[in-house]
Image (cartoon, rainbow, N blue to C red; front, side, top):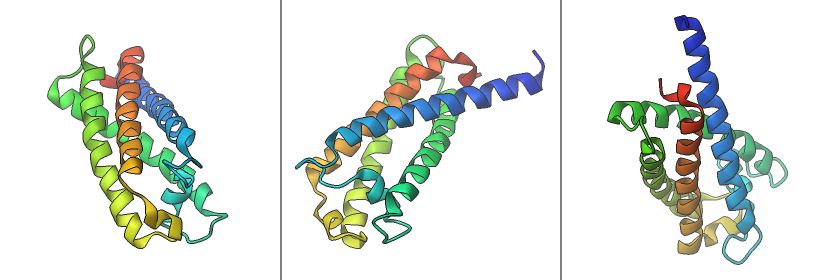
Length: 157
């Protein structure tokens, strides 16, 4: 296999793994959307960072969320390679740990920062329960990504 094929194989594997892991995370969070735990559509929350339009925010949020999820998959792959979490079940363990850290940071950003500056008054009501949902969602992202990296081993070459 030449380096061009290998590069395409690595990129396409990470792209596919990132898309699937982002979809898993999104579905988990959307299960809570509209409930007392998470009263707002999370894609609207993300989209409100760039627009105050209630119509456009979920669309912007979906595009931003998948773009960032795919970019995060590339970062996770680099971190897993750099730390040696590439054999046996190590991609799942390593990516889950990274997902926990990622979730902790994103929970803080979404709940605290958007709570202060969100376009919608409902965003200002984000609290610890919502932060917990976002944290678990990012741990699921990491675990899903690690599993996909095991299924698509070219991602960690």
